[in-house]
Image (cartoon, rainbow, N blue to C red):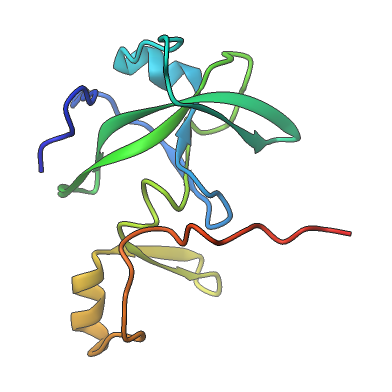
Length: 150
């Protein structure tokens, strides 16, 4: 699948990410943006913010092509965020959240045996034998809101 026009690709870069079911978007640190040659700070760029490690970090959204190192056939164009500030230091280079990662796969976590599986939805449905919903969705629920703490 070709990346959208203007998407950034860098086939020689391996990036480690944390799979986070609570993250609404997939995002990467500034070092990944620099390694991929993503130019941050363009006029009219799509910007936002993420919260991680007790901080609030400004991000810029870009379209990139993501490929799983364990399965080079698993590749897709994704809208992801890049943290603008190089001060963010994480033990991994990115967070694989709902938009850009989890919305492409079925991810099964097995804490008892301490592993997780990443499967294409069609492979998962073939293995399980049926869909669990009448109308599977291919995009995030735009009306979903994070629960508020009192």
